[in-house]
Image 1 (cartoon, rainbow, N blue to C red):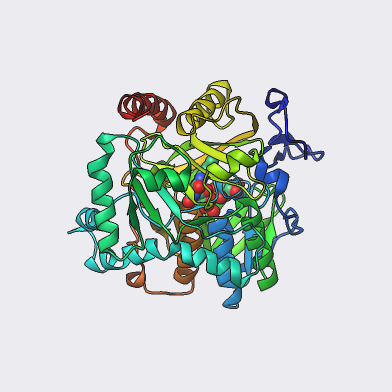
Image 2 (image 1 turned 90 degrees about the vertical axis):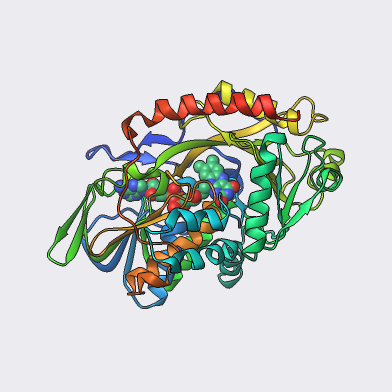
Length: 457
Ligand SMILES: Cc1cc2nc3c(=O)[nH]c(=O)nc-3n(C[C@H](O)[C@H](O)[C@H](O)COP(=O)(O)OP(=O)(O)OC[C@H]3O[C@@H](n4cnc5c(N)ncnc54)[C@H](O)[C@@H]3O)c2cc1C
């Protein structure tokens, strides 16, 4: 792989037509990312071409769908996983690979949100689900011997300005009281651990860490196949209808009949299930990979190989890769494909965090969709008998979707919903959902303005 690449020559290679245009199948290839360039090879998969019948059909071959497939196949069920693209084509093959085991709100705030609406058992079970999520992911990696540069070196969260301090302290106190392994660090320790002089304080959560996400999701696919599941790629499900006690999923060339269906489509949810798409807003997140750091930069930046995220409303998050690049992320302003403004924002962000980095070279830049919910909590729904979905990990889905997949599998296997850490809720649409693109754009600009006003640098 060459280190220096001309990003202007990168085409929209993620979307091309297949040779077989008789049924106008749009082929969804992975974006041109560092992950795609360095991941382990995927297991062999094929399109679905003939009708089939299974116990459970899963739409979406990301962390969520594939973890569910492993659990179900190991429990003796026949399983078909179907994805419109490759394994990991969605957010699972594009994300920052940060395994962050703390939620967006303190557990007490979540309990208040649910008070009077859901049984109190959920508020008691929720914190452990979040806190243990990183350990569960690393256990999965070890159990299936997935080669994905997994490192559990800890996650740093840093305060970008005074205005974030009160919320940060509430979060710290709330999660520490709920049993999270988490330690406050002052400016000096933060600078020593991150190499950034730009933050005033933060925390370290030692159970956090990172993976090469495309290698991880491909490893899950290999484990699912080994357990007996079939995975069909480049196979979009166009229609989902009940037939008696069963479900029929129709694709361009064939149909699957299933007793139960899991929708593991997260930020790429379409119209298969009426009203589901409107429960989340897909927000674009951008990732960019620098050229490999020089030995001097490498020794200063994240010397303990922690992952890092800050408290900005339009977050900056980054980590070092196996080949010592920085992968830096933030929100995207240009839609699914990063544009020039996104590239400029990433370079500006990097230079704010690491003022000593000059002449920053980005070798790769790509984007993907995060599913944001109204209450910033993940949701489990059962829109109809035999149909389950779990989505809305709000940018924390590397660990959480891994756990969510297991929860959906357990529900399909008959687990009592009261044993879950999340209530099974009805579909609640975002108001004015059809204007979400415009709304997100305006909100991002407004939030960035506030961040810039408040930031220490
Ligand atoms: C750029 C970016 C950075 C991120 N960084 C982090 C991070 O550092 N840490 C973290 O915890 N989280 C992060 N996230 C979030 C995390 O990646 C997601 O929460 C997680 O990958 C979701 O997994 P999933 O399996 O639920 O969905 P996905 O991986 O998005 O999979 C959904 C799949 O459904 C398929 N699909 C949809 N409709 C159909 C249909 N009709 N027929 C067939 N297939 C269909 C799609 O093709 C897609 O592959 C990031 C997300 C992005 C986009």
